[in-house]
Amino acid sequence: MRVTVVGGGVVGTMHAWQAVERGHEVVQIEREAEARGASLRNFGQIWVSGRAGGEELESALRARELWEELGARVPGLGFRANGSLTPVRGARELAVAEAAVAREDSAARGYKLLTPTEARAVNPALRGDFTAALYCERDAAVEPRTAQLALRAELSKSPDYTFLPGREVREVVGEHAVRDDHGEVHASDAVILCTGAWLGGLVRELAGPELPVRRVRLQMMQTDPLGEPLTTSVADADSFRYYPAYRGQALDQLNAEQPQLPTAFAHAMQLLMVQRADGGLTIGDTHEYEHPFAFDTTEDPYDHLTEAVESLLGRPLPKIRRRWAGVYAQCTDPARVVHRQQVRDGVWLVTGPGGRGMTCSPAIAETTANELDW
Image 1 (cartoon, one colour):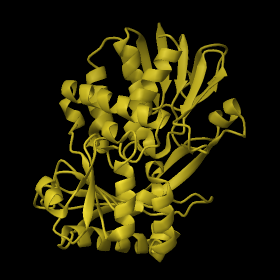
Image 2: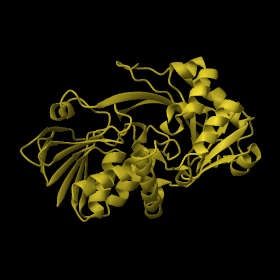
Image 3: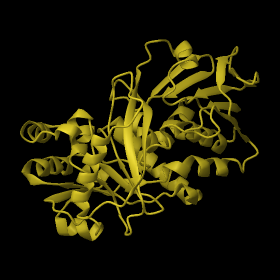
Image 4: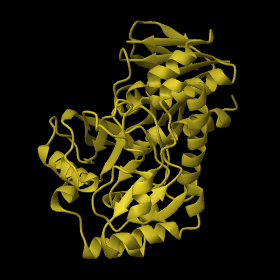
């Protein structure tokens, strides 16, 4: 069987991986020299803790297993089972953490509520004041700027894999074939369009104007090396307001009695923080939903993030090395992990995982392969 994958990001690369692993011949086409979208501009988190119960959590847990298997085979992914800590302050934030630990699926996530002393035993870098911390053992991390490169290097060892960069697919030709902007036609048994936040052009032509996917913009930053290990990923209680696992009466009371700070509310913010392989910290993020998106970054969110991080670390941040904005595609129905649609005979569009793309991409690709009976 021959498979054409359009898109060089993590979702496309995982589809290529699934196809090669199942013994198929794969051509992967990427319009840039290298992927430059949301697959690189993220935390590299394999984030189980905040996922909605049911299909979303099942997808995240399966993806977590697959990431660990991949990490053992491809060390360049930088996979590490580091878990996460979400420090909380005060009775209302603590109540949300307690409600999370009381969930029926708490054990599957690896939830534990830790005292400050227990949390610092897990992550000594958290020297700030807090009441308790929600620990999630199943969370993990990879290196987002190099993960696709490492996967593709491993794929390239197979004679059944070809990567074609710098080519934009312009049209579907007949059945099971696409033409790129070099005029070359790529015929195959299946075409998988993993185009990320690119929702116009050919995608709109194939899927129609009512595609149930929207674009979301974010801002993030990265520091110089911290100078000490940050042994877990770290979130703050604003992540309770963002992730569906924490919804309920305790969160409603938190929002009513202790609303977000104005900057965090205005930019739909949460704090997430992961240490990179070089010791620097990736810190974010904001969420912008209204089009047209700003073309520049805004400083107030970065000031808010800096203050939030320093209050947890109990020390000044290292120098900010870089700041960036990114855009990802998200299903408008938050209950859907991904939008998977057959848009022509033998042609499928797979898009819209939103902030779950890095986490769930191995499971998304596995499901596609199973449904297409590869």
